[in-house]
Image 1 (cartoon, rainbow, N blue to C red):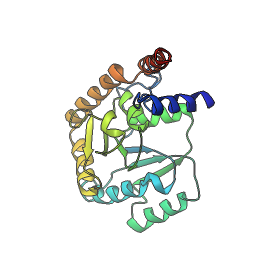
Image 2: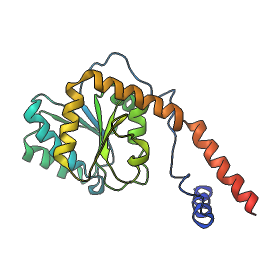
Image 3: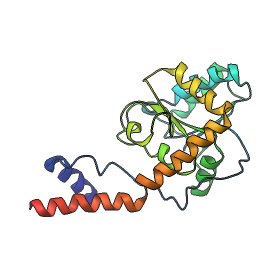
Length: 220
């Protein structure tokens, strides 16, 4: 961790940008699955208020009006805040539509991505955000806010949708659009996978870090 902190400090002092905060995805592990066994909206995030999973639950309430049997899976190890999410699920009357899976193993998490129809990312403030990248590697389009990290990782109308913060109605509508249009969903999913292969593999990430360190050495 000390080495990582050092890179951050170097970037701040040398004006070398935000290379460090970008990450890569293991595209050999996170791969698309041709035949899905389920259909649902997925989100993967820590159960803390800052992640605003409550935004997604409100979207599910709206989506249910159009797609009554919509399913949503929310992964993550339970925290004290999980009880608040469970209360909101009951208040919104979406118990039959929502599953809090608890903590998943690595293989279970990959499977959750692969079987999802769309990926929801409702966290309002993320420097980067790994979830949309892992979803994209599995060929799943993401619907995110047009703000912060997802502005770099999601290409609007190509690999998913970037929604004006915090328009929950529009976010819900875009999920409905993708859930109901398999051709569009598959097209965006394929685009998302290619986006990962071109920009966000671990090899590319390591090359970026190497260039940062080379600049530091040159300046010294």
